Image 1 (cartoon, one colour):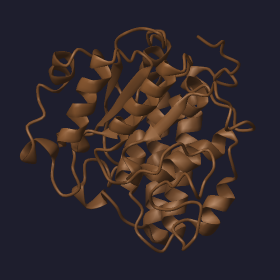
Image 2: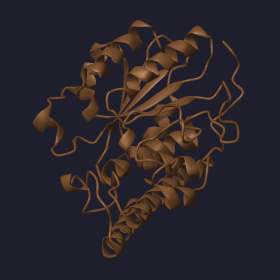
Image 3: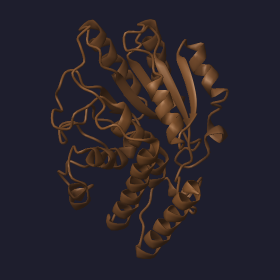
Length: 291
């Protein structure tokens, strides 16, 4: 296989990654408080730690060389969490946070409610229609294997979309083609848009379903940075034969008390008073975690 010429960038401690994740959440709330339309803030907050761990620790990417063939590929299958990805990428140096705030959701903006690779260089796949990210990632990983390239393909899914058959066809294909360079990460926040997951779809026993398809299954607390880092660091080599899924137990709306596990905050906007309350709650939550 080709020799890697990239690494995952500056090495951060777990404490530093936690600080970055807190800052990501602050920026999410600030954008939600300035944008006139609805932001998918609940699911953004649930994946903030995961995207911080990926873009600041796990993914082998270079913001100054976004087409480097040795880069890891990232596919945001839950495309409605795009703004969280945009901010994570901005904090890594791909572009400026102020540019996101200035144009987010506007006609012809590079920062749409769902990511578009045509509009925004650095985005690997245009996503938004759920259930497609893992099939795309399987194809990308299979292509890399055929070209004897040693990068990984990582995709982040919401647990709700794993109720779709296209996901499980891709799960089967990933194992059948022995794609050890493929990593799926599941945001297991147990909520759908208008209900809690188990009320509509019986997902449990969830990890066992992936095991039954022959995947390497890792279960972590998706808000524990040390567990996220440990899971990333322990991934099998890209030339191994078994794909990996990291199932992250998360809380939708994490960090803001009136958003956590609240179905009303799948998407929404924050007025000035609500923004102040949200930021105060986030700060209190952060202080509690660091005591």
